Image (cartoon, rainbow, N blue to C red; front, side, top):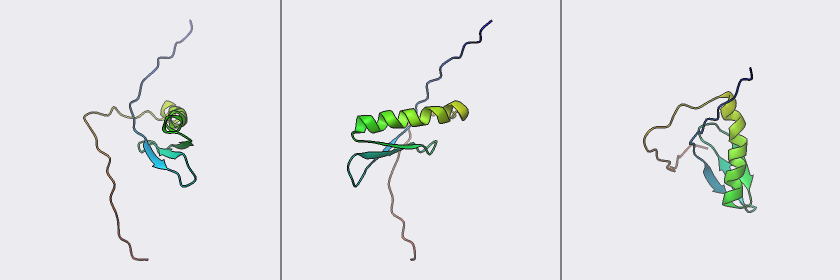
Length: 78
């Protein structure tokens, strides 16, 4: 008999950062995977492609409830 693989859908997040040279850098905070693209759509598609192999080896727990991403500043002594 042939074992079949089932597909699991993961809802995860991406952070889009405008790149100084144009386009966008993308980061998935749950996995640490990064990618880039010239447009938002391309950047997200590339991040999806980069994140999928990671999730195959290291599945994430289910995300429940609504989460929030924020920015904050930190002062350090240089």
